[in-house]
Each structure stands twice: as C-alpha cells, then as structure tokens.
Amino acid sequence: MKCRQCRRDIPQDDRYEHAGNLYCEDCYIQILSPTRFCDPWADYSAKSFEKHGMISPLTEPQKMLLKLIKELGKAEPAELIEHTRGGN
Image 1 (cartoon, rainbow, N blue to C red):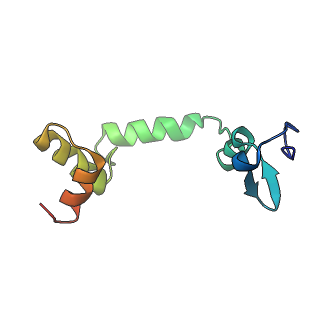
Image 2 (image 1 turned 135 degrees about the horizontal axis):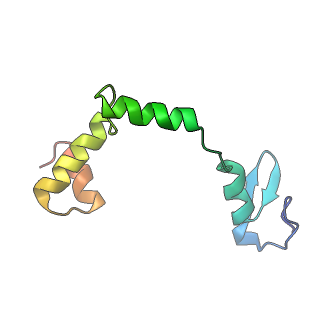
C-alpha cells in the first residue's frame, strides 16, 4: 500500500488512517499538526500582557505540577499522577 500524500510504500503495521485515506507516519503527523506561521502581533501582545501581569504564562494545573516537582526534587509521571489525585 502507498501513502496517499508522499506515495511511498508503507508496511501494514505503519499505516495511519485519516479521513478515509492511508498515510505513512511522517505525512500523518504533518496532517494533524500542520506548520503554523508566527503571528507577530499575538506574540507581542502575549509578552506585553505577561510583562504587565495581565496574564500568567502558566495555567493553574501547570503551576501545581511545577510546585510539586520543586518540592519533590524530581518526579516520575506516575508519581505526579498519584500526588495530583490526592494519593500522597
């Protein structure tokens, strides 16, 4: 079978389906995460808002995880899950 986009032969176990078509892994990733170009005004606004304390660069869950990692020194994903679910 050939990739719909790049036309390379793809093995049975490396095929990805999207919208009824089969793709190789590289093309599948490009389809799901297309290249986006920078928006200079959005970038400037975000930096400006952050600088003036109008927004935080981290969400509350991200802040909680960062605090937990700092307290523990290091942590595996399973440990973070356990701590965030209240399983101390």
